Image 1: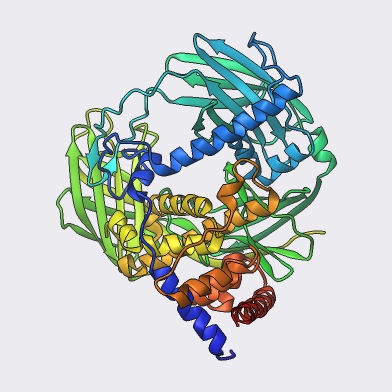
Image 2: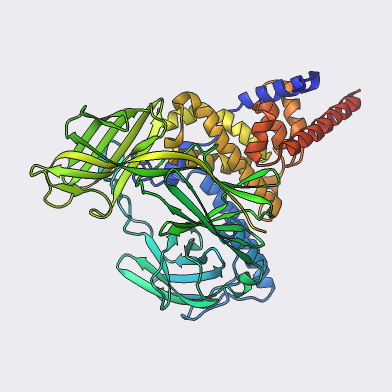
Length: 464
Length: 161
């Protein structure tokens, strides 16, 4: 590498001094706490409840920006003679304006393409219950998914948080807010659906977000979109069609498999669209339930084309171990690469409910470091030295009662689990909390699976 | 490690990096907030504890900045044009301020590679990986940017004479 000349040296030193001379201008902690809804399962580090305070600066600025754009859009529509519809239950011509909706669209390459090509145009259906209006702003169906953009207006102000999540060493029992709106989507007459719901953004236009389900199996289908709000449930029906998006897509069946150390990945098909390269693949392996810590710098799956590595731009979700990932558009020759995966390995490791109890798992001593019980809630923390890089933690938890009976813990028994699994400074910490099955008094806890990291890579040439 | 304490310790530097990458205070604030939120939600993925925190957050921040830059290439903001004008941000001395003012005049294509190379001291390979562009593109952008900066500095000197 060439040594830096005087100009480069001065530039570097000047820029470094400039960078070091800054002063913090944002209250990041308040902003992060507000946006991450402290107390839910995602806030694992510092679960203190945020006291109410003035709106953080970012939000004020954002509202200001939104209002200026809304005003401009409204003025433009007014000047064009457009009128805002009065809602009467039928579809109305509500234009998609405002940075919230466009931001949702622009963040998603497939949605953006559809929007640019006039496939997302206006309100498709709406219903009103009391003061609350539920509206479908757009539908987009393509080879990867079927996405609905929704809006809910007129929700009453949020009830104050009672601030009493149940906690055990930083893990919280999820407390679903009573004022939350859930949205589900399914194909009318279909087999039921899987909904990938993104909680909406709160905007001056109400709650705006997306909900997606699997791709349509026919060119056109009726979708039922159900909004659940408190005791209310509202269903709207809209038509979705893949006809236009399919016209610009090309699907190539592949059906090639590779197996490495008990993990078999089959690339089933590749679909080339103007906006994305979509790969559909099946992963067959002994399962490991629980979070896994991957190195974000080298363990990501990617498509390599023209000397560039493209990360996944959107995951379409997976059902029955079949996944769809979208990458930016690429042309063959290109390779799909999975560098690493994790499989489950059966174990039988039992700890009496005594802090400090140690059991060996795959040659690694794993210690029950913490145990806490609050009523029916139990929480465990295990630690172990990160001495076996292939060992990715433990899962498949059961409690043993005084009769020696095992009772599985987890989502099939209780409605929730809260867990984490990570390595910090050479020590793996595995935390797990959930609700005990009714009437069970545990005397021991057992793990039935260990996660084992398998380094591939699994490499597939993408077809032309 | 307390996430917010670590964040506070690095915040001023991160704010300047975001500002340098995006050359716009409003976008820099957005990027920093998104990065802080992402870091908070994924702090378990941090390896190496407190010592690695700064570099880890910087990487998250650069990715957020990169997203915003990509968005800028796709659409031009129409709502508040004044928010998108370059900011004048003084440094601790005249030479540092002058260095930034030169770099601030570079385009969104060229400025980030200069910031990553000379402000953060990333290698060309690291820049290529972070921006997901070929190494050759990094080299050519650096070459082009340096040539422009030299020319700008020369012009400033001529004007001052």
